[in-house]
Length: 70
Image 1 (tube, helix red, strand yellow):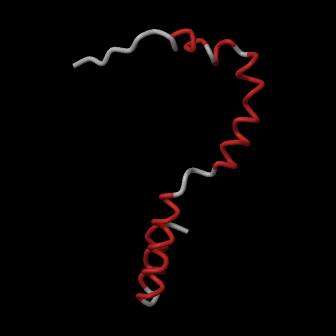
Image 2: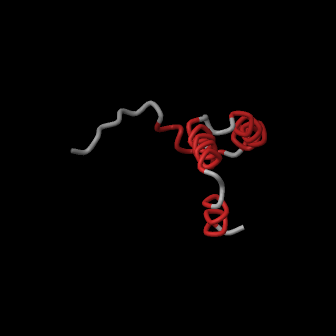
């Protein structure tokens, strides 16, 4: 379903349902990005990060000082 179609369908809802939907959307934006999904992604990639030096090449810079350009 395209965005415009979705908006048209939402506009046909009674105002109370539109407000409820808006509140749910706002609430979903405030929630942290699916921690469970992030954990699965981290578990999936941990082996690659432990064995592939190209993925961690810049960690050698972690202890260097950082100076913001002004």
